[in-house]
Length: 119
Image (cartoon, rainbow, N blue to C red):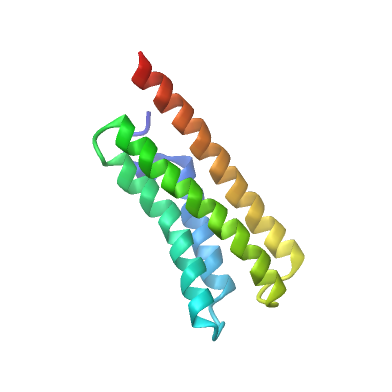
């Protein structure tokens, strides 16, 4: 197991995704949309971090589930990024792929934590 949340690949990828999202909507004047997608991206990495430090597998799993929900929100909002012409289809697909990898990593970690809790 990782010694800190910074060691977790899913947190590292979430940090990268967050930076990509911020760069993507940097010049947007649609402040409501911009705020929503940025907050969802930040929520992924922060919930992973907060859960890691929470002190129990059950709490960590709960935070990971929230992070996974935020991952889905970012993935959904990326369609709007394309629709609103903040990015093209290739960039949307690229970022959605990163989000899916994070989501798969979160699910894998939840499975490991669940099996560890049952032992």
